[in-house]
Image (cartoon, rainbow, N blue to C red; front, side, top):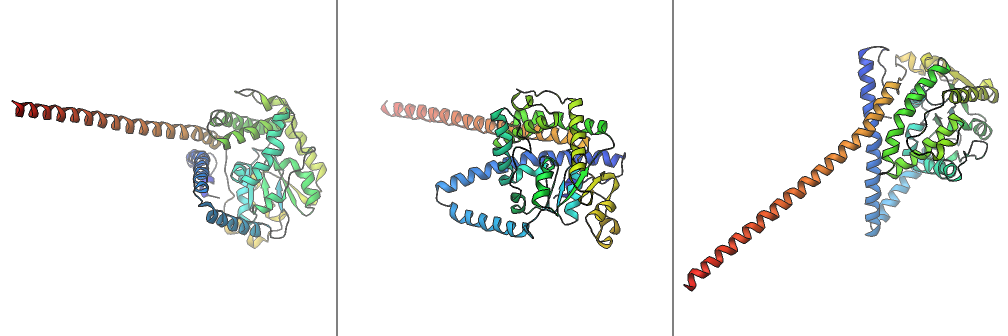
Length: 363
């Protein structure tokens, strides 16, 4: 993952303030950038397939995918699953796990992994919307081997955090980390900021990009799960606000179910403020290999402020790009029209002069 997602500055400092803004803008711009690049790539593939040039590129893609599969399935099992709700430090922990050698898929990058994302959209998110009924973890078990196929041995955040029972049964040696905040009120304030930040980009972006619309399906399903209310599945925009009482109840009930379901030997309840030591100890990382021994700071990312700036930049960035493209097209059209007008006038002038010359010769 890119270091632009990291903000490890001291808390409360100006450097943290500007670091949050910078990382938020960088990540916010990165999302629509990926979506536009994906749309262009699909357009190029469609053109090359029509011209018969797709075979060589598809074989290259196939070999690339196979190499990632071979690298991902080191021993055929998931190693670490984050089972905390979003806004509990899951992104910082994902970066930490990457640092410790566990390739981690966070929900923030779920859409970039098309096989995994499509599997969830088709079988859970969009299907819930079609049926107007939330498909809960006890109703459907996803294909977790897709994570291994993608080269991941760990996950963080929802939706994977909900499937701890199934994952524990399939991968009994897998370890689970329950990320928590200081209290439920602190968690809800952060969750509420996130939901308000992402709904507007999803509302307007879904009209233009298929990928954004699929994220809209996930968002609706997610809000339905966290609020225990299927209204979000098919409610028109703007979506209803988060229900504080229901959200907190869902958060607390989920955490307690995790504690009751996963053996203590395989579960770490963890606040990212605790840093490297409890994490390295739980994952049996030798002290000599623990980043804290080498003075490497624990990743700090995705604060509420950074998330707000992500939303601003993910919405304003494409808007500015669209205006720029429209302005460029209009300018080109205007220059072309002006040139055509000048050409026609010149032609008329030359024709008139020729007629005058011919008239003089006749005389």
